[in-house]
Image 1: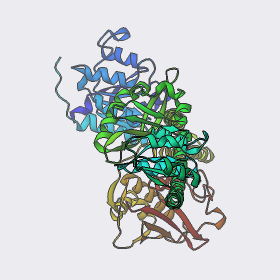
Image 2: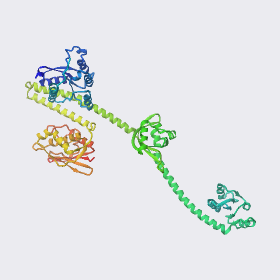
Image 3: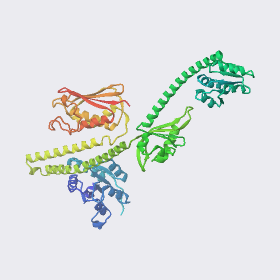
Image 4: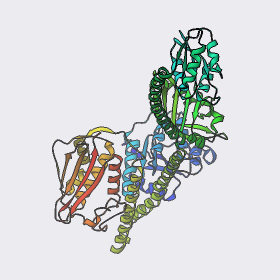
Length: 151
Length: 475
Protein backbone atom coordinates (compact mmCIF):
# COMPACT_ATOMS: atom_id res chain seq x y z
CA UNK A 1 0.00 0.00 0.00
CA UNK A 2 1.11 3.49 -0.80
CA UNK A 3 0.49 4.77 2.71
CA UNK A 4 3.04 2.34 4.13
CA UNK A 5 5.87 4.00 2.36
CA UNK A 6 4.99 7.56 3.41
CA UNK A 7 5.50 8.03 7.14
CA UNK A 8 2.56 9.64 8.94
CA UNK A 9 3.16 12.79 10.91
CA UNK A 10 1.64 12.41 14.36
CA UNK A 11 1.48 15.20 16.94
CA UNK A 12 1.38 13.92 20.51
CA UNK A 13 0.34 16.49 23.14
CA UNK A 14 1.26 14.92 26.49
CA UNK A 15 2.91 16.33 29.60
CA UNK A 16 3.75 13.06 31.36
CA UNK A 17 7.18 11.86 30.15
CA UNK A 18 6.38 8.24 30.98
CA UNK A 19 3.22 8.42 28.91
CA UNK A 20 5.16 9.99 26.06
CA UNK A 21 7.64 7.16 26.06
CA UNK A 22 5.01 4.47 26.39
CA UNK A 23 2.97 5.97 23.56
CA UNK A 24 6.05 6.05 21.34
CA UNK A 25 6.74 2.42 22.18
CA UNK A 26 3.16 1.40 21.61
CA UNK A 27 3.16 3.14 18.23
CA UNK A 28 6.42 1.42 17.31
CA UNK A 29 4.76 -1.93 17.99
CA UNK A 30 1.88 -0.87 15.74
CA UNK A 31 4.22 -1.28 12.77
CA UNK A 32 2.90 1.75 10.96
CA UNK A 33 5.76 4.02 10.01
CA UNK A 34 5.30 7.43 11.55
CA UNK A 35 7.09 10.59 12.49
CA UNK A 36 6.18 11.43 16.03
CA UNK A 37 6.30 15.06 17.17
CA UNK A 38 5.93 15.54 20.90
CA UNK A 39 4.82 18.75 22.61
CA UNK A 40 4.51 18.94 26.38
CA UNK A 41 1.82 21.51 27.06
CA UNK A 42 -1.13 23.25 25.45
CA UNK A 43 0.76 26.40 24.57
CA UNK A 44 3.49 24.45 22.80
CA UNK A 45 0.85 22.48 20.91
CA UNK A 46 -0.73 25.72 19.62
CA UNK A 47 2.70 27.16 18.79
CA UNK A 48 3.46 24.03 16.77
CA UNK A 49 0.17 24.05 14.89
CA UNK A 50 0.11 27.80 14.21
CA UNK A 51 3.88 28.05 13.56
CA UNK A 52 4.61 30.43 16.36
CA UNK A 53 7.44 30.80 18.89
CA UNK A 54 9.94 27.95 18.53
CA UNK A 55 8.00 26.55 15.59
CA UNK A 56 8.23 29.51 13.20
CA UNK A 57 9.99 27.42 10.59
CA UNK A 58 7.36 25.35 8.86
CA UNK A 59 9.84 22.57 8.01
CA UNK A 60 10.32 21.96 11.73
CA UNK A 61 6.61 21.66 12.36
CA UNK A 62 5.06 19.67 9.51
CA UNK A 63 1.30 19.54 9.44
CA UNK A 64 0.25 16.38 11.33
CA UNK A 65 -2.09 13.79 9.86
CA UNK A 66 -3.29 12.93 13.38
CA UNK A 67 -3.28 14.70 16.75
CA UNK A 68 -3.28 12.74 20.00
CA UNK A 69 -4.35 15.13 22.74
CA UNK A 70 -4.47 14.83 26.52
CA UNK A 71 -6.99 17.02 28.44
CA UNK A 72 -5.10 17.83 31.60
CA UNK A 73 -2.16 19.87 30.36
CA UNK A 74 0.00 22.64 31.81
CA UNK A 75 -0.57 26.28 30.73
CA UNK A 76 -3.43 25.78 28.25
CA UNK A 77 -5.63 22.74 28.76
CA UNK A 78 -6.57 20.23 26.09
CA UNK A 79 -10.12 21.54 25.71
CA UNK A 80 -8.84 24.99 24.74
CA UNK A 81 -6.34 23.47 22.32
CA UNK A 82 -9.13 21.40 20.78
CA UNK A 83 -11.36 24.47 20.50
CA UNK A 84 -8.69 26.46 18.67
CA UNK A 85 -7.93 23.58 16.29
CA UNK A 86 -11.61 23.09 15.45
CA UNK A 87 -12.16 26.84 15.02
CA UNK A 88 -9.40 27.06 12.43
CA UNK A 89 -10.56 26.63 8.85
CA UNK A 90 -7.59 24.48 7.83
CA UNK A 91 -6.60 22.75 11.08
CA UNK A 92 -10.11 21.53 11.78
CA UNK A 93 -9.73 18.89 9.09
CA UNK A 94 -7.00 17.08 11.05
CA UNK A 95 -8.43 14.17 13.05
CA UNK A 96 -8.04 14.84 16.80
CA UNK A 97 -8.20 11.96 19.24
CA UNK A 98 -8.53 12.80 22.92
CA UNK A 99 -6.44 10.30 24.85
CA UNK A 100 -7.13 10.75 28.52
CA UNK A 101 -7.93 9.14 31.83
CA UNK A 102 -10.94 11.35 32.50
CA UNK A 103 -14.31 9.76 32.13
CA UNK A 104 -16.14 12.81 33.40
CA UNK A 105 -19.32 13.09 31.38
CA UNK A 106 -18.89 16.83 31.03
CA UNK A 107 -15.42 16.33 29.52
CA UNK A 108 -16.75 13.78 27.07
CA UNK A 109 -19.76 15.88 26.07
CA UNK A 110 -17.69 19.05 25.76
CA UNK A 111 -15.09 17.31 23.63
CA UNK A 112 -17.69 16.13 21.16
CA UNK A 113 -19.35 19.56 21.24
CA UNK A 114 -16.04 21.06 20.22
CA UNK A 115 -15.78 18.57 17.37
CA UNK A 116 -13.36 15.92 18.59
CA UNK A 117 -13.08 12.91 16.27
CA UNK A 118 -12.61 10.31 19.01
CA UNK A 119 -12.57 10.27 22.79
CA UNK A 120 -10.54 7.42 24.18
CA UNK A 121 -9.72 6.50 27.75
CA UNK A 122 -6.18 5.31 28.42
CA UNK A 123 -6.28 1.83 29.89
CA UNK A 124 -3.99 0.96 32.77
CA UNK A 125 -2.63 -2.21 31.16
CA UNK A 126 0.06 -1.57 28.56
CA UNK A 127 -1.07 -4.43 26.30
CA UNK A 128 -4.53 -2.90 26.11
CA UNK A 129 -2.96 0.48 25.42
CA UNK A 130 -1.07 -1.02 22.48
CA UNK A 131 -4.40 -2.31 21.12
CA UNK A 132 -5.95 1.13 21.54
CA UNK A 133 -3.10 2.88 19.74
CA UNK A 134 -3.20 0.29 16.96
CA UNK A 135 -6.91 0.86 16.51
CA UNK A 136 -6.49 4.62 16.40
CA UNK A 137 -3.87 4.36 13.68
CA UNK A 138 -5.79 1.76 11.78
CA UNK A 139 -8.94 3.82 11.76
CA UNK A 140 -7.75 7.40 11.44
CA UNK A 141 -4.71 6.76 9.30
CA UNK A 142 -5.57 3.80 7.13
CA UNK A 143 -9.35 3.33 7.06
CA UNK A 144 -10.50 6.92 7.15
CA UNK A 145 -10.47 8.95 3.94
CA UNK A 146 -9.54 12.54 4.77
CA UNK A 147 -10.58 15.50 2.60
CA UNK A 148 -7.88 16.68 0.20
CA UNK A 149 -6.01 19.62 1.62
CA UNK A 150 -4.63 22.17 -0.75
CA UNK A 151 -1.71 24.45 0.06
CA UNK B 1 -102.64 50.19 72.92
CA UNK B 2 -102.85 49.79 76.67
CA UNK B 3 -101.06 52.33 78.86
CA UNK B 4 -99.89 50.90 82.16
CA UNK B 5 -98.15 52.14 85.31
CA UNK B 6 -96.45 49.97 87.91
CA UNK B 7 -96.19 50.39 91.65
CA UNK B 8 -93.07 48.71 93.03
CA UNK B 9 -89.81 48.12 91.22
CA UNK B 10 -88.61 45.35 93.49
CA UNK B 11 -88.37 41.74 92.38
CA UNK B 12 -91.85 41.78 90.86
CA UNK B 13 -91.33 45.02 88.99
CA UNK B 14 -87.95 44.10 87.66
CA UNK B 15 -89.32 40.79 86.34
CA UNK B 16 -92.42 42.33 84.77
CA UNK B 17 -90.86 45.37 83.12
CA UNK B 18 -88.80 43.58 80.45
CA UNK B 19 -91.69 41.24 79.65
CA UNK B 20 -94.24 44.00 79.25
CA UNK B 21 -91.78 45.89 77.15
CA UNK B 22 -91.81 43.10 74.65
CA UNK B 23 -95.48 43.51 73.81
CA UNK B 24 -96.01 46.18 71.17
CA UNK B 25 -99.59 46.93 72.32
CA UNK B 26 -98.58 47.57 75.94
CA UNK B 27 -96.76 50.72 77.01
CA UNK B 28 -95.50 51.25 80.55
CA UNK B 29 -95.82 55.01 81.14
CA UNK B 30 -94.59 55.36 84.73
CA UNK B 31 -93.10 53.42 87.62
CA UNK B 32 -93.60 54.37 91.28
CA UNK B 33 -91.01 53.28 93.86
CA UNK B 34 -89.77 54.96 96.98
CA UNK B 35 -86.74 52.79 97.57
CA UNK B 36 -84.05 54.25 95.32
CA UNK B 37 -82.02 51.01 95.41
CA UNK B 38 -84.83 48.84 94.02
CA UNK B 39 -83.50 46.64 91.15
CA UNK B 40 -86.36 47.51 88.78
CA UNK B 41 -85.41 51.18 88.71
CA UNK B 42 -82.34 50.50 86.65
CA UNK B 43 -84.39 48.59 84.09
CA UNK B 44 -86.96 51.40 83.99
CA UNK B 45 -84.21 53.93 83.34
CA UNK B 46 -82.79 51.80 80.54
CA UNK B 47 -86.22 51.56 78.93
CA UNK B 48 -86.67 55.32 79.30
CA UNK B 49 -89.63 55.05 81.70
CA UNK B 50 -90.03 57.95 84.14
CA UNK B 51 -90.03 57.20 87.88
CA UNK B 52 -91.91 58.79 90.74
CA UNK B 53 -91.50 58.37 94.51
CA UNK B 54 -95.20 58.85 95.22
CA UNK B 55 -97.55 56.23 93.80
CA UNK B 56 -100.49 58.61 94.20
CA UNK B 57 -98.97 60.70 91.34
CA UNK B 58 -99.87 57.88 88.95
CA UNK B 59 -103.53 58.82 89.13
CA UNK B 60 -102.71 62.14 87.49
CA UNK B 61 -101.29 60.56 84.30
CA UNK B 62 -103.34 61.28 81.24
CA UNK B 63 -104.61 58.34 79.18
CA UNK B 64 -103.58 55.71 81.73
CA UNK B 65 -105.57 52.47 81.44
CA UNK B 66 -104.26 50.42 84.35
CA UNK B 67 -102.16 50.57 87.50
CA UNK B 68 -100.62 47.33 88.74
CA UNK B 69 -99.64 47.18 92.38
CA UNK B 70 -96.79 44.77 92.70
CA UNK B 71 -95.84 45.60 96.28
CA UNK B 72 -98.37 43.12 97.79
CA UNK B 73 -99.47 45.90 100.13
CA UNK B 74 -103.34 46.05 100.13
CA UNK B 75 -103.28 49.51 101.73
CA UNK B 76 -101.73 50.95 98.58
CA UNK B 77 -104.42 49.39 96.42
CA UNK B 78 -107.24 50.72 98.58
CA UNK B 79 -105.68 54.18 98.75
CA UNK B 80 -105.41 54.29 94.96
CA UNK B 81 -108.97 53.04 94.52
CA UNK B 82 -110.24 55.73 96.85
CA UNK B 83 -108.75 58.57 94.81
CA UNK B 84 -109.35 56.98 91.39
CA UNK B 85 -111.48 59.54 89.53
CA UNK B 86 -110.62 58.68 85.91
CA UNK B 87 -111.80 55.07 86.04
CA UNK B 88 -108.37 53.56 85.77
CA UNK B 89 -108.26 49.80 86.33
CA UNK B 90 -106.38 49.09 89.50
CA UNK B 91 -104.91 45.65 89.75
CA UNK B 92 -103.71 44.56 93.17
CA UNK B 93 -104.04 41.79 95.67
CA UNK B 94 -104.85 38.43 94.16
CA UNK B 95 -104.92 39.73 90.58
CA UNK B 96 -101.47 41.25 90.79
CA UNK B 97 -100.34 38.16 92.62
CA UNK B 98 -101.50 35.90 89.80
CA UNK B 99 -99.80 38.11 87.24
CA UNK B 100 -96.66 38.14 89.34
CA UNK B 101 -96.67 34.35 89.60
CA UNK B 102 -97.12 33.99 85.86
CA UNK B 103 -94.33 36.42 85.14
CA UNK B 104 -92.09 34.88 87.77
CA UNK B 105 -92.38 31.38 86.28
CA UNK B 106 -91.75 32.79 82.86
CA UNK B 107 -88.72 34.64 84.17
CA UNK B 108 -87.30 31.55 85.85
CA UNK B 109 -87.69 29.60 82.63
CA UNK B 110 -86.00 32.35 80.74
CA UNK B 111 -83.17 32.43 83.25
CA UNK B 112 -82.65 28.72 82.82
CA UNK B 113 -82.53 29.10 79.05
CA UNK B 114 -80.24 32.04 79.44
CA UNK B 115 -77.90 30.04 81.65
CA UNK B 116 -77.80 27.29 79.05
CA UNK B 117 -77.11 29.86 76.38
CA UNK B 118 -74.43 31.42 78.51
CA UNK B 119 -72.81 28.05 78.99
CA UNK B 120 -72.87 27.41 75.27
CA UNK B 121 -71.32 30.81 74.65
CA UNK B 122 -68.60 30.06 77.17
CA UNK B 123 -67.91 26.74 75.51
CA UNK B 124 -67.84 28.38 72.10
CA UNK B 125 -65.48 31.01 73.43
CA UNK B 126 -63.24 28.35 74.93
CA UNK B 127 -63.16 26.60 71.61
CA UNK B 128 -62.39 29.83 69.82
CA UNK B 129 -59.62 30.63 72.30
CA UNK B 130 -58.28 27.11 71.93
CA UNK B 131 -58.12 27.40 68.16
CA UNK B 132 -56.69 30.89 68.39
CA UNK B 133 -54.09 29.56 70.79
CA UNK B 134 -53.09 26.84 68.39
CA UNK B 135 -52.71 29.35 65.60
CA UNK B 136 -51.06 31.87 67.85
CA UNK B 137 -48.54 29.59 69.52
CA UNK B 138 -47.75 27.29 66.61
CA UNK B 139 -44.03 27.27 65.92
CA UNK B 140 -44.97 27.51 62.25
CA UNK B 141 -45.52 30.89 60.73
CA UNK B 142 -49.23 31.56 60.09
CA UNK B 143 -50.19 34.70 58.22
CA UNK B 144 -53.60 35.62 56.82
CA UNK B 145 -54.34 38.32 54.28
CA UNK B 146 -57.41 39.92 52.78
CA UNK B 147 -58.16 39.70 49.07
CA UNK B 148 -55.91 42.70 48.38
CA UNK B 149 -53.06 40.72 49.95
CA UNK B 150 -52.76 43.01 52.94
CA UNK B 151 -51.77 41.23 56.14
CA UNK B 152 -54.69 40.64 58.51
CA UNK B 153 -53.13 38.39 61.14
CA UNK B 154 -49.60 37.44 62.05
CA UNK B 155 -48.97 34.79 64.71
CA UNK B 156 -46.20 34.39 67.28
CA UNK B 157 -44.43 31.83 65.07
CA UNK B 158 -44.25 34.46 62.34
CA UNK B 159 -42.93 37.05 64.81
CA UNK B 160 -40.28 34.60 65.93
CA UNK B 161 -39.25 33.42 62.47
CA UNK B 162 -39.25 36.80 60.74
CA UNK B 163 -38.42 39.04 63.70
CA UNK B 164 -41.19 41.64 63.19
CA UNK B 165 -43.75 42.72 65.78
CA UNK B 166 -47.24 42.06 64.48
CA UNK B 167 -48.32 45.67 64.91
CA UNK B 168 -45.58 46.68 62.47
CA UNK B 169 -46.75 44.42 59.66
CA UNK B 170 -50.53 44.07 60.02
CA UNK B 171 -52.16 46.12 57.27
CA UNK B 172 -49.10 46.16 55.02
CA UNK B 173 -49.00 44.36 51.68
CA UNK B 174 -47.57 40.82 51.82
CA UNK B 175 -45.01 41.70 49.12
CA UNK B 176 -43.26 43.95 51.64
CA UNK B 177 -42.03 40.88 53.51
CA UNK B 178 -41.70 38.57 50.51
CA UNK B 179 -38.12 38.34 49.24
CA UNK B 180 -38.81 36.64 45.91
CA UNK B 181 -41.26 39.13 44.43
CA UNK B 182 -41.75 37.19 41.20
CA UNK B 183 -42.58 34.06 43.16
CA UNK B 184 -45.16 36.02 45.13
CA UNK B 185 -47.05 37.07 42.01
CA UNK B 186 -46.81 33.64 40.46
CA UNK B 187 -48.00 31.97 43.64
CA UNK B 188 -50.92 34.32 44.14
CA UNK B 189 -52.12 33.68 40.62
CA UNK B 190 -51.89 29.95 41.24
CA UNK B 191 -53.83 30.15 44.49
CA UNK B 192 -56.59 32.18 42.88
CA UNK B 193 -56.80 29.65 40.02
CA UNK B 194 -56.26 26.37 41.84
CA UNK B 195 -57.38 27.13 45.39
CA UNK B 196 -54.18 26.14 47.15
CA UNK B 197 -50.48 25.53 46.75
CA UNK B 198 -48.54 23.30 49.11
CA UNK B 199 -44.89 23.11 50.18
CA UNK B 200 -43.73 25.90 47.91
CA UNK B 201 -40.13 26.86 48.65
CA UNK B 202 -39.51 30.58 48.63
CA UNK B 203 -37.81 33.34 50.64
CA UNK B 204 -39.20 35.93 53.04
CA UNK B 205 -37.53 39.11 54.21
CA UNK B 206 -36.52 39.09 57.88
CA UNK B 207 -36.18 42.11 60.12
CA UNK B 208 -32.88 43.82 59.37
CA UNK B 209 -33.09 43.06 55.62
CA UNK B 210 -31.95 39.46 55.64
CA UNK B 211 -33.91 36.58 54.20
CA UNK B 212 -34.87 33.07 55.18
CA UNK B 213 -36.03 30.05 53.22
CA UNK B 214 -39.53 28.85 53.98
CA UNK B 215 -41.77 26.07 52.77
CA UNK B 216 -45.17 27.69 52.25
CA UNK B 217 -48.62 26.16 51.99
CA UNK B 218 -51.10 28.76 50.85
CA UNK B 219 -54.90 28.38 50.68
CA UNK B 220 -57.93 30.54 50.00
CA UNK B 221 -59.88 31.74 53.02
CA UNK B 222 -63.64 31.63 52.48
CA UNK B 223 -66.61 32.87 54.50
CA UNK B 224 -69.87 30.96 55.21
CA UNK B 225 -71.27 31.79 51.80
CA UNK B 226 -68.13 30.38 50.13
CA UNK B 227 -66.94 33.81 49.10
CA UNK B 228 -63.15 34.22 49.06
CA UNK B 229 -62.20 36.73 51.74
CA UNK B 230 -58.45 36.33 51.63
CA UNK B 231 -55.64 33.81 52.01
CA UNK B 232 -54.03 31.84 54.82
CA UNK B 233 -50.41 30.81 54.58
CA UNK B 234 -48.67 28.33 56.85
CA UNK B 235 -44.90 28.18 56.53
CA UNK B 236 -41.99 26.32 58.00
CA UNK B 237 -38.52 27.73 58.35
CA UNK B 238 -36.37 25.53 56.08
CA UNK B 239 -33.18 27.59 56.24
CA UNK B 240 -31.43 24.74 58.03
CA UNK B 241 -32.61 22.23 55.43
CA UNK B 242 -31.44 24.53 52.64
CA UNK B 243 -28.07 24.88 54.32
CA UNK B 244 -27.72 21.11 54.52
CA UNK B 245 -28.74 20.77 50.88
CA UNK B 246 -26.09 23.28 49.90
CA UNK B 247 -23.48 21.47 51.95
CA UNK B 248 -24.51 18.22 50.31
CA UNK B 249 -24.12 19.74 46.86
CA UNK B 250 -20.72 21.10 47.86
CA UNK B 251 -19.54 17.81 49.28
CA UNK B 252 -20.79 16.07 46.13
CA UNK B 253 -18.74 18.57 44.16
CA UNK B 254 -15.75 17.75 46.32
CA UNK B 255 -16.33 14.06 45.74
CA UNK B 256 -16.59 14.70 42.03
CA UNK B 257 -13.24 16.49 42.08
CA UNK B 258 -11.74 13.73 44.17
CA UNK B 259 -12.99 11.12 41.76
CA UNK B 260 -11.47 13.09 38.90
CA UNK B 261 -8.15 13.25 40.71
CA UNK B 262 -8.28 9.56 41.44
CA UNK B 263 -9.09 8.66 37.89
CA UNK B 264 -6.47 10.89 36.33
CA UNK B 265 -3.61 11.20 38.76
CA UNK B 266 -3.65 7.80 40.42
CA UNK B 267 -4.01 5.90 37.19
CA UNK B 268 -1.06 7.65 35.52
CA UNK B 269 1.68 6.07 37.66
CA UNK B 270 -0.07 2.73 37.36
CA UNK B 271 0.14 2.95 33.61
CA UNK B 272 3.82 3.67 33.89
CA UNK B 273 4.37 0.68 36.18
CA UNK B 274 2.48 -1.72 33.95
CA UNK B 275 3.89 -0.20 30.77
CA UNK B 276 7.54 -0.55 31.63
CA UNK B 277 7.06 -3.90 33.34
CA UNK B 278 5.46 -5.16 30.12
CA UNK B 279 8.26 -3.72 28.00
CA UNK B 280 10.81 -5.34 30.30
CA UNK B 281 9.07 -8.68 30.00
CA UNK B 282 8.77 -8.44 26.23
CA UNK B 283 12.01 -6.78 25.14
CA UNK B 284 14.41 -7.97 27.87
CA UNK B 285 13.10 -11.53 28.22
CA UNK B 286 16.49 -13.04 27.41
CA UNK B 287 18.39 -10.92 29.90
CA UNK B 288 16.12 -11.93 32.80
CA UNK B 289 16.09 -15.26 34.57
CA UNK B 290 12.95 -17.13 35.62
CA UNK B 291 12.70 -15.39 39.02
CA UNK B 292 13.12 -11.99 37.44
CA UNK B 293 10.31 -12.65 35.00
CA UNK B 294 8.15 -14.01 37.83
CA UNK B 295 8.59 -10.86 39.92
CA UNK B 296 7.76 -8.68 36.94
CA UNK B 297 4.63 -10.69 36.33
CA UNK B 298 3.63 -10.08 39.95
CA UNK B 299 4.22 -6.36 39.58
CA UNK B 300 1.95 -6.40 36.56
CA UNK B 301 -0.73 -8.36 38.45
CA UNK B 302 -0.65 -5.89 41.31
CA UNK B 303 -0.88 -2.94 38.93
CA UNK B 304 -3.82 -4.43 37.13
CA UNK B 305 -5.56 -5.20 40.44
CA UNK B 306 -5.05 -1.61 41.52
CA UNK B 307 -6.48 -0.55 38.17
CA UNK B 308 -9.60 -2.63 38.79
CA UNK B 309 -9.94 -1.20 42.31
CA UNK B 310 -9.83 2.33 40.97
CA UNK B 311 -12.29 1.45 38.22
CA UNK B 312 -14.77 -0.11 40.68
CA UNK B 313 -14.45 2.75 43.14
CA UNK B 314 -15.15 5.20 40.36
CA UNK B 315 -18.13 3.16 39.32
CA UNK B 316 -19.47 3.13 42.88
CA UNK B 317 -19.10 6.89 43.18
CA UNK B 318 -20.92 7.40 39.91
CA UNK B 319 -24.00 5.39 40.89
CA UNK B 320 -26.69 7.76 42.02
CA UNK B 321 -24.86 10.75 40.64
CA UNK B 322 -25.15 9.76 37.05
CA UNK B 323 -28.68 8.49 36.56
CA UNK B 324 -30.40 7.35 33.44
CA UNK B 325 -34.15 7.82 33.09
CA UNK B 326 -36.29 5.02 34.51
CA UNK B 327 -38.21 3.15 31.85
CA UNK B 328 -40.38 0.06 31.73
CA UNK B 329 -38.17 -2.85 30.75
CA UNK B 330 -38.81 -6.57 30.69
CA UNK B 331 -36.48 -8.43 33.04
CA UNK B 332 -35.87 -10.97 30.27
CA UNK B 333 -34.45 -8.18 28.08
CA UNK B 334 -32.17 -7.18 30.93
CA UNK B 335 -31.00 -10.77 31.37
CA UNK B 336 -30.37 -11.16 27.64
CA UNK B 337 -28.14 -8.10 27.78
CA UNK B 338 -26.38 -9.57 30.84
CA UNK B 339 -25.77 -12.81 28.92
CA UNK B 340 -24.21 -10.75 26.13
CA UNK B 341 -21.97 -8.88 28.59
CA UNK B 342 -20.90 -12.08 30.36
CA UNK B 343 -20.76 -14.22 27.22
CA UNK B 344 -17.10 -15.24 27.46
CA UNK B 345 -17.26 -15.61 31.23
CA UNK B 346 -20.26 -17.95 30.89
CA UNK B 347 -18.68 -19.92 28.04
CA UNK B 348 -15.22 -20.26 29.62
CA UNK B 349 -16.71 -21.60 32.86
CA UNK B 350 -19.39 -23.71 31.10
CA UNK B 351 -21.91 -22.02 33.37
CA UNK B 352 -25.55 -23.07 33.16
CA UNK B 353 -28.04 -20.24 33.39
CA UNK B 354 -31.66 -21.27 34.02
CA UNK B 355 -34.18 -18.49 33.78
CA UNK B 356 -37.84 -19.15 34.66
CA UNK B 357 -40.28 -18.33 31.92
CA UNK B 358 -42.60 -15.31 31.90
CA UNK B 359 -40.56 -12.75 33.78
CA UNK B 360 -42.34 -9.44 34.52
CA UNK B 361 -41.49 -5.93 33.40
CA UNK B 362 -40.16 -3.40 35.89
CA UNK B 363 -39.58 0.35 35.92
CA UNK B 364 -35.87 0.85 36.29
CA UNK B 365 -32.62 2.35 35.11
CA UNK B 366 -31.90 -0.29 32.48
CA UNK B 367 -28.14 0.28 32.33
CA UNK B 368 -27.78 -0.04 36.12
CA UNK B 369 -29.99 -3.11 36.24
CA UNK B 370 -27.79 -4.84 33.68
CA UNK B 371 -24.75 -3.87 35.72
CA UNK B 372 -26.37 -5.10 38.97
CA UNK B 373 -27.36 -8.51 37.56
CA UNK B 374 -24.01 -8.88 35.78
CA UNK B 375 -22.28 -8.40 39.12
CA UNK B 376 -24.53 -10.91 40.90
CA UNK B 377 -24.23 -13.52 38.14
CA UNK B 378 -20.47 -13.14 37.68
CA UNK B 379 -20.14 -13.63 41.44
CA UNK B 380 -22.23 -16.78 41.15
CA UNK B 381 -19.89 -18.00 38.40
CA UNK B 382 -16.75 -17.07 40.32
CA UNK B 383 -17.46 -18.47 43.77
CA UNK B 384 -17.85 -22.10 42.77
CA UNK B 385 -15.86 -25.10 43.86
CA UNK B 386 -13.03 -25.74 41.37
CA UNK B 387 -14.37 -29.16 40.33
CA UNK B 388 -17.99 -28.06 39.82
CA UNK B 389 -19.62 -26.24 36.93
CA UNK B 390 -21.70 -23.20 37.93
CA UNK B 391 -25.49 -23.70 37.84
CA UNK B 392 -27.46 -20.50 38.29
CA UNK B 393 -31.22 -20.18 38.57
CA UNK B 394 -33.11 -16.91 38.24
CA UNK B 395 -36.77 -16.50 39.12
CA UNK B 396 -39.24 -14.35 40.99
CA UNK B 397 -42.36 -14.20 43.12
CA UNK B 398 -45.18 -11.78 42.38
CA UNK B 399 -45.97 -10.01 45.67
CA UNK B 400 -48.74 -7.49 46.16
CA UNK B 401 -46.67 -4.29 46.01
CA UNK B 402 -43.39 -5.58 44.60
CA UNK B 403 -41.57 -8.36 42.78
CA UNK B 404 -39.18 -10.53 44.72
CA UNK B 405 -36.44 -11.84 42.45
CA UNK B 406 -33.82 -14.42 43.31
CA UNK B 407 -30.47 -15.51 41.91
CA UNK B 408 -29.63 -18.98 43.18
CA UNK B 409 -26.24 -20.63 42.70
CA UNK B 410 -24.55 -23.94 43.53
CA UNK B 411 -21.43 -22.19 44.81
CA UNK B 412 -19.28 -22.54 47.90
CA UNK B 413 -21.81 -20.67 50.08
CA UNK B 414 -21.29 -18.00 52.71
CA UNK B 415 -20.80 -18.59 56.41
CA UNK B 416 -23.82 -17.34 58.35
CA UNK B 417 -21.80 -14.85 60.40
CA UNK B 418 -20.82 -12.98 57.23
CA UNK B 419 -24.27 -12.82 55.64
CA UNK B 420 -24.96 -9.33 56.95
CA UNK B 421 -21.60 -7.82 56.08
CA UNK B 422 -20.96 -9.10 52.57
CA UNK B 423 -22.50 -5.96 51.07
CA UNK B 424 -20.01 -3.73 52.92
CA UNK B 425 -17.32 -2.10 50.84
CA UNK B 426 -13.94 -3.92 50.61
CA UNK B 427 -15.42 -6.82 52.55
CA UNK B 428 -13.84 -9.95 51.15
CA UNK B 429 -14.21 -13.48 52.48
CA UNK B 430 -11.39 -15.05 50.50
CA UNK B 431 -7.82 -14.17 49.67
CA UNK B 432 -7.15 -13.05 46.13
CA UNK B 433 -5.28 -16.23 45.14
CA UNK B 434 -8.42 -18.27 45.81
CA UNK B 435 -10.98 -15.90 44.32
CA UNK B 436 -9.95 -12.57 42.84
CA UNK B 437 -11.95 -9.36 43.07
CA UNK B 438 -12.02 -5.92 44.54
CA UNK B 439 -14.62 -6.26 47.30
CA UNK B 440 -16.74 -3.55 45.73
CA UNK B 441 -19.01 -5.58 43.45
CA UNK B 442 -21.75 -6.37 45.99
CA UNK B 443 -21.62 -2.82 47.35
CA UNK B 444 -22.41 -1.61 43.85
CA UNK B 445 -25.24 -4.17 43.64
CA UNK B 446 -26.75 -2.94 46.90
CA UNK B 447 -26.47 0.72 45.92
CA UNK B 448 -28.27 0.09 42.64
CA UNK B 449 -31.08 -1.82 44.40
CA UNK B 450 -31.43 0.98 46.96
CA UNK B 451 -31.65 3.54 44.17
CA UNK B 452 -34.69 1.61 42.96
CA UNK B 453 -36.26 1.75 46.44
CA UNK B 454 -35.66 -1.96 46.75
CA UNK B 455 -33.91 -4.19 49.22
CA UNK B 456 -31.44 -7.07 48.96
CA UNK B 457 -30.51 -9.95 51.24
CA UNK B 458 -28.94 -13.38 51.00
CA UNK B 459 -29.58 -16.88 52.31
CA UNK B 460 -26.81 -19.42 52.15
CA UNK B 461 -25.49 -22.77 53.31
CA UNK B 462 -21.81 -23.62 53.22
CA UNK B 463 -21.12 -26.07 50.41
CA UNK B 464 -24.65 -25.92 49.02
CA UNK B 465 -24.79 -22.47 47.48
CA UNK B 466 -26.27 -19.05 48.05
CA UNK B 467 -29.49 -17.38 47.03
CA UNK B 468 -29.59 -13.60 46.65
CA UNK B 469 -33.05 -12.12 46.97
CA UNK B 470 -33.93 -8.59 45.92
CA UNK B 471 -37.18 -6.74 45.69
CA UNK B 472 -38.20 -4.05 43.22
CA UNK B 473 -41.42 -2.15 43.88
CA UNK B 474 -44.14 -2.26 41.23
CA UNK B 475 -44.29 1.32 39.92
